Length: 333
Image 1: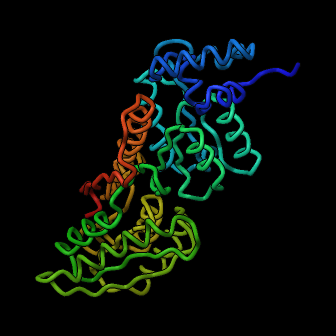
Image 2: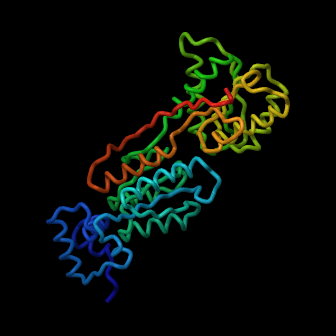
């Protein structure tokens, strides 16, 4: 006789595997359904495995967090993951952090969902993973929340990127009307950067706004060295004073500043510089960088709170739940 699984119980009881898991872990399941599940398990001779047994306590739960940048130096995603981790741990949830770097990794995540071992899934992947993990989560009634990416029928936690661009433009216009920003040539997170630039342009076009000259330069990446490369070009070709909005992020902005500083440009006289993200480096750098805060840790906490609500049986509207960015004025403007 083959070993019985949680899927066998779910089929006999005519409920999802996630409902079976909640029934054995003391989660939110009505008593009639719980009784039917227990009777089905007894009839099949099903015994929860060690992993499922770890869920029997009243409070501990397991949430999968999928990110394709677990091993990278992407400080933006690290801040989001920190917020998710803090919120889940504060609510007595356990976490499985899954790097989505290959199809086998995605298949592994699908397999543990099918075994009923996940109480929720948070995807911090900007929509780059395959569709199967999302479909599987919905099929097994596992709460699913995406971050900065919308999947149909599920809630997402997002930042109003366009509003960030508007904040940067309004701030720089108080310093100069000679402006530069950067668009991204590659496919790395283009939607967010495009939205920031759109907001920047929209603020410049708003009725009553002083007329400004805007130059949009194309960059090949988001890193410090690419910012430094374009900073050298700006230093050689631009008229002073110059307002620079790095929609491409804080590390890029610090590269721009280093190159222009080496060419003799002075902050708050020749150059007014605004970054985007508010990574820790932006406040520890010398000079400290004026930037648009994405409230990244709060974003992660928002995603975790929505998963917790869904797990507890509280319906979260399947829409975009949006945080507003904040201008952090420091020494570069």
